[in-house]
Length: 258
Ligand SMILES: [Zn+2]
Image (cartoon, rainbow, N blue to C red; front, side, top):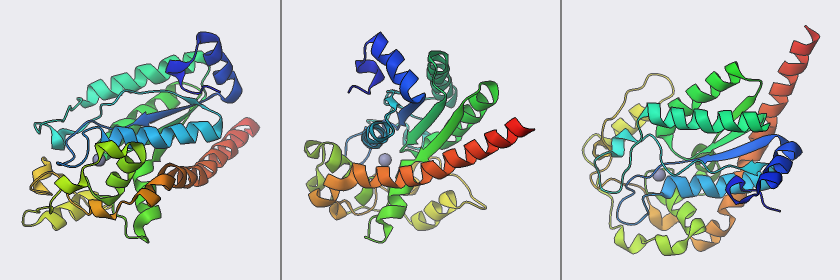
């Protein structure tokens, strides 16, 4: 059965919406990923997981487009940065159309940290304006948690991102060109600073973290691990997604009683 909106006919789309009322959108970015990974790494990773999530939920997969909000990579060859306004307008328009089509639940499968603030803003805004539910699935963080014990790290162009690209298309992975990552003084502290959940700061260019625009251990990724990548990360997403939807249903039934 077709589940990609762009590949469906109009009657097939109507049927797909009526079946699950759920749309799954992949969100990533096109940005430099060093000499060994494609610029579209984040988008391909998001698409891989989102397709599997949509398939398992019997939901509709809705292509978003490859670009994201990525000012820290702007100006480096291969990067295309969307302004926040552009990204938010695009996401708002796509989701509004889907709501008109009958979609009630949105699962945004994201693989790029720079999109998170804008994603959250659009999701809360649309949920406020329409009778719909948004769920954000930060697939990159799910992967980070799941692979941590096994030595996998979520770094820009590192092990987990290389794994995702091996899973997508091994011909796009050129680990032999990676060399050793070079990090400027203070890079570890800068990375910890920007990723803290309590008191945190911001960086303006990826060179503050990595001299050549990437860091980590691409060699960690193996074909064996890659074969299971989409299934493993999707399992992780779906485990938590159930809890989020249950919380929504509880809230709804409480509201109905009021
Ligand atoms: Zn990436």
